[in-house]
Image (tube, rainbow, N blue to C red; front, side, top):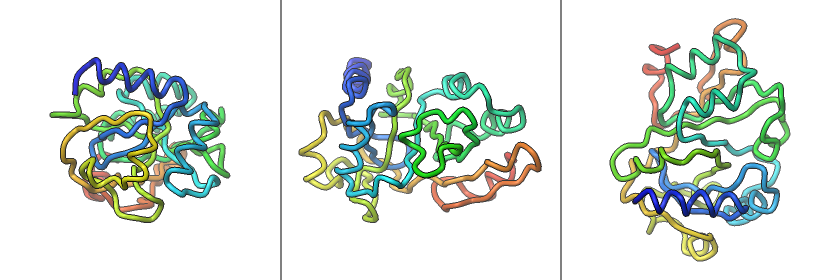
Length: 202
């Protein structure tokens, strides 16, 4: 993967295209989080119900924190300690940003900042967020190689980025929506990041 590949990825997403790409955990699908057409296509490719939320991925922590300026100091500090990593973090969204990603709860946003190393490290150069979800049919196994992505998905995306073989373990989902006031958190889904690592950081 090269910087030119990443630039093509950004151009594809910017016009509401759907891209197949590697993250730090599994292969995913990405589109512009504000493109209703792009989000509809991404969900249709997965067979995912439109009311289910997705995550918004930034490729640098600083970009995420700048975009979500209303986050409280305690929550921001937690994100700085936790990210980047194989986490999807649920954070308060009082400004109701990225509504197409939020499903029935516009006041909660799923946030991803992947830890990009090795073959996928060039993606750190991407400057704009994407709405992303795993590149599989809803409820089926995650893809660790591009060849593991179902053929009907690969044939209908607008571009593909091959990052080689990935770990294949989906992100841990961590709920920090109550962290600002009382320091409470909840692991919603076990995954790539262990509970011990989260407890040490929080």
